[in-house]
Length: 197
Image (cartoon, rainbow, N blue to C red):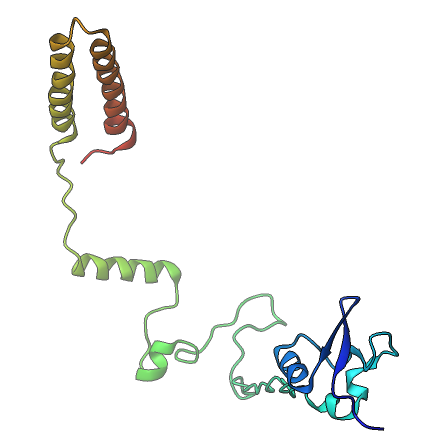
């Protein structure tokens, strides 16, 4: 039986086509059709999967097989190493010096004790030697000075506009509104939002 030159496809419950071999290969490469897509030489059927149509089944690209690499584990604990904690006794056993402390393993000499409080004290001593002391003197607060300058300059402009445009009700209204909104807003920003600087 000869291969049909054009095929109809059933995609999303609709008959589409006819498609030539080049267009079918392009659809297969882009993933629109799969080997299980139903095809027929006639729009009325019979419908069979594309993979059953000989050469058309070979136009689908081979997908690479993805496999995970087996992980190799290395056993770092040796049977000859002494146990850190004996499960049989209720008390912790003393570990020989240098067996688990990385500082003593490299030098061969006993290092500092493995005690959290002693390590914190050692860190505090090192920090005191290397850091300069913090200056705890209080600085003058420039916030009040900047607040007063802003209030005098901007509110002075609004008061000048209020006096200059006293006969005009629009100018009077906008000047009063600007005076109130700016005073409340800058007070909230400087003393509610900002910190001392």
